[in-house]
Length: 343
Ligand SMILES: Cc1cc2nc3c(=O)[nH]c(=O)nc-3n(C[C@H](O)[C@H](O)[C@H](O)COP(=O)(O)O)c2cc1C
Image 1 (cartoon, helix red, strand yellow):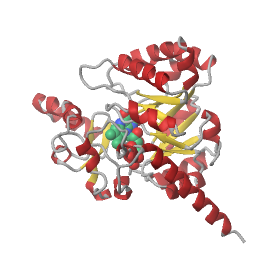
Image 2: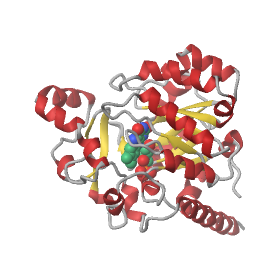
Image 3: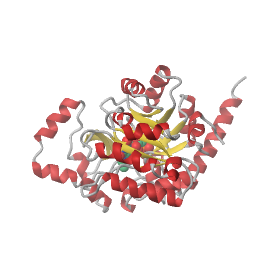
Image 4: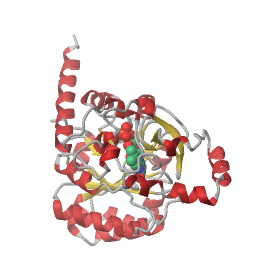
């Protein structure tokens, strides 16, 4: 077993988290990860026609019905995200009023927006005072990590540019970002994210000051993930070069290079992104909004297929438990080998 500040903070067997993957459902995946001794995260599902508070509520109920292990949830705090205010006010209240949820839903991860919105919510303050819940925020740059610290977070998720899905304009690799953030905030609890799929990489993250890793693409390629089989089937043959950064709803996004992705520019700044958004026609906007719905139904050509460069090291679709056990075994071997190099 590998014990770290993060496994102790959340009472976990293994330092492995599933990354949030909204707007897709990750209920079964989160359940499998938590049951396997890691920490599973419920994604912010905000596909048109859904109520994000109700979606999270249903998932929270599902989780406590099926496991006694800890888990977490994600709220995208971008002002473009539908229902942010309702989520930061309503969800802590729902969890507060249910003792089992309060005990288990310990990891509150915000991302893609301000780290201040959740701690400013009165209902979250009340929940924090009366439970063990922890607030983490995704930091894709050192200056953003500083903002997280100023907001009073309990820890951060350090996500580099090789990761799948939501990204920042910074384009710093996980390797460099972890070193920068670890130097700047040595005592801040950190979860490394973006590009992880093996035990060797977990060991690297632990060496660089992280207490756990979070994986998205690796877990999409699992038997339990709710992603369409055609989506999963892109991963084992995929290479890092099959993905690229394109325009997304909340900033840059790493996508598989299909027809949909290649129809979008790769903006290098917020200004370019705003200029692009102003230039698109109402028809294209509707087409873009339907990209998640399409891919959910298996259209991997004109749908948005979010994946990270780590697909280049994932060779099979496996059971979540086997993925986690294999990574931990590999990491233990590497840690012992590394130790044996000391003279
Ligand atoms: C399909 C997909 C959807 C994602 N949606 C979200 C999201 O809703 N919120 C978020 O903070 N990050 C989101 N991300 C980013 C992941 O949380 C994580 O940073 C990324 O998957 C890490 O890189 P990896 O795929 O190499 O493991 C998404 C990633 C993917 C692949």
